[in-house]
Amino acid sequence: MRLIPVLIVVALVGGCSDPIKGAWYDEVHQTAGWWETVGYDLDADDLEDPEIAFGLLLNTNEFADSHVGIGSVPSDQYLAFNTLLQREDAPKAFGVLLRRAHPAGQLYALNGLYLTDRARFENEVWQYATSSETVLTLSGCVGGFATVGEIVRHPEGIRLPEGVSYMERAKAWFEALNRGEREPDSLLEGQRDIVGGVWPEILDARGR
Image (cartoon, rainbow, N blue to C red; front, side, top):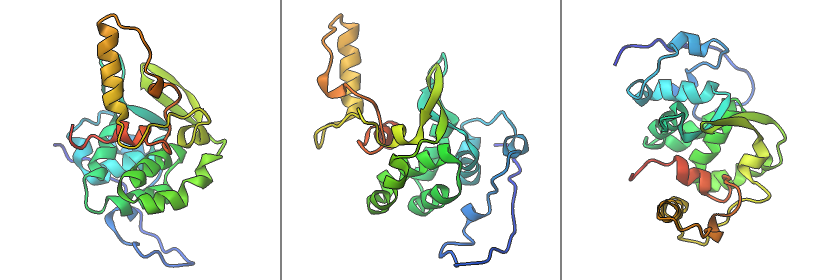
């Protein structure tokens, strides 16, 4: 993998001390020029570097699905998210993202906390559930806009019974559709959101 420069910020911040100040993720800078700094041609190998992965999620303005584009390739955000998710310090990294990232990055942080620190997720999520702030979205080949609140807790969000997998149900439905069976799966009716666990399951590549 080629070496890619990551901006480092050194600053003295007054006020209350942060118990995890000084960790590696506190040294990745949020800046409008971050993409130019690391280069636009990031690949999967680059995004295995936790600092680059963190920097991407810290600076992203787009909430992208797991797979995007005509070829349905993994999105950069999805790859970066999973690089952080597999780390032992994932809960702390996602906590810092929640505090420092743009709104789209905060959505990835909430997904990460849902998967790694449910207690903190429950404490933090409700302040975002009513947010009217708008973010860019990308799912497959379809781009658009959505509010943070809709992505966090949609009024028509899918609510699956305990132990039921969204991904497994969706896969079974698509397979049935390909066989010419067009009966809808009532459990999949509704919108994907974080609180219902659908977005966290979609973004979690562990075990796949």
